Image (cartoon, rainbow, N blue to C red; front, side, top):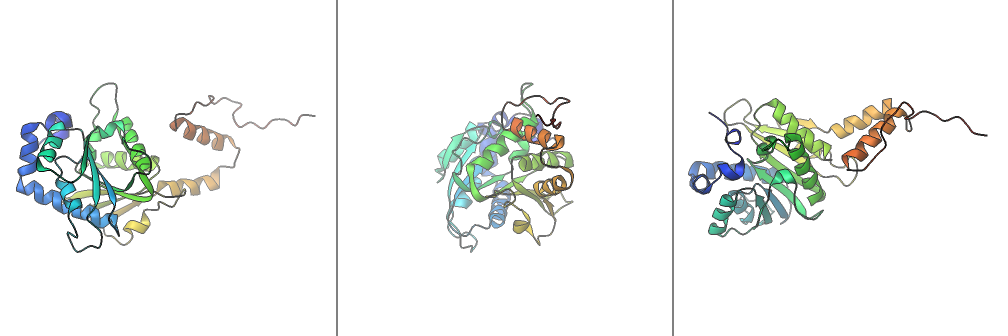
Length: 280
């Protein structure tokens, strides 16, 4: 059976007919509800928060966010803002008069909100669509980079995000989690019911106030089936042992960081990092 994202772009796949079919299915409603509650558990919110719902669709997950004390947790109800690429899905949400504010936007083009706007973010069954480039002028890596960089900026320091998705394979799983880490997140993967057709994958992200304050191990420690990935910590430890400040490797890495931020830097040459003679 083919995956939806392999057939059509999301704004075309979720037309008026498919959007209503998706929203009214009792099976999908149950799955969406369970996964949204799971995401809220992983967020571990202690008070009513402003939450971004990425790929909010017709508002199935938003209805859970708006519910007061849905599962006996101290947090909630939450205020939420959702965006989706499908106008048909958002049309169904408007008809249902969901409580959240809705925006028509493509996550692959970034997250169109001011820095530090949200306390937390969730996404249910959406971000695997970013792995598909819809034209020759785009790439999956570019779409993922724009999304995760925008998401990182939109969250306050100390904020968290839980993104449930259906990876096609381990390569796609690595592609998504690596893009999140490059954007600055502390990241961990959690899989419920691994190895079964009911497997659900959650990418748990933290935003630190400092270089390593987003350590994901504090969120998922002790959870069964968690793969902890904080490559920033490992990379820093490797650099301490191999790179001396001012060395060629150190300079090249710094220039690469500047290029990723869109800064213009001079090209490397045989003179990069070379020590100058003392001038008298």
